[in-house]
Amino acid sequence: MDLNLKGKVVVISGAAGKEGSIGETILQRLAEEGAIPAVIDRNARGFGYVEAIQKKGIDAIFCQTDVTNPDQIESAVKTIAEKYGRIDVVINNVGVNDGVGLDASYEEFMDSLKLNMVSYFLIVKHALPFLIKSKGNILNIGSKVALTGQGRTSGYAASKGGVLGLTREWAVDLIKHDIRSNAIIIAESWTPSYDTWIRTLPDGEAKLQSIVKKIPLENRMTSTNEIADTCLFTISNRSSHTTGQFIFVDGGYVHLDRSLLTED
Image 1 (cartoon, rainbow, N blue to C red):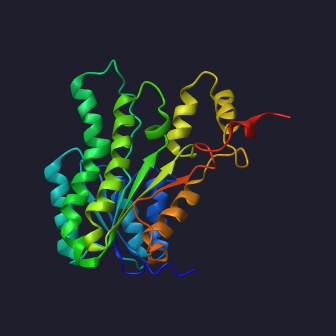
Image 2: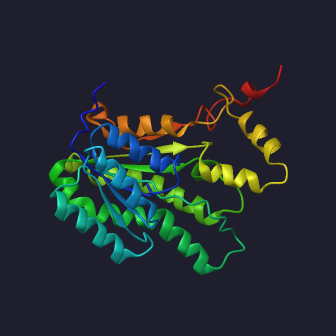
């Protein structure tokens, strides 16, 4: 299926994670579709990713940016807009489950909000004039934690809850401009960060198996490729009448009956 993303300028934040991360996987899939990825991330790894994409004959740009810094976000979006003269899609993908709980300081809590939610607001705010011109769309990457809670992560949970609120608010606010706004909600996905976390646990393998058993569909984690596939379909014109939606790519983790998990 041709998703008609070729030549579309797609701003994506948090896409310079380690190889195999959600953002990096989405980035590579965008390039495969012939889109023009415009990466906003603080990690210099993004320079290498973009250079590799360019060597394949696909245009791309990396703006090294601390997304907790409003001025840097504004500058990054301006740089992208000046180079291409348009922005067709914004994918907000920043997310760090930073463990900022009730024992954290005010400053730590606010820093978590700035990273995990406020950056979404600022990128869309500065990209909006161009999205209006292109009748583009917004895709926010969310988390099950916004709906289920997790414990000991108030900052991340509040941020991801706020991201879902912004998703619906923007769908309403921007409908007059024919701009769509949706969110992808992820539960358990195997990423380099997940692997690192499991390795820190004394009983990591047992913990991993207990998590996998709780995923109803095929008792396995969601792959980053499956997440990327859903993202690309959602931002494409093949999903042209979908807005204000929370799209779960989670193998039924959040909603399906727990009786499915009963062992025979």
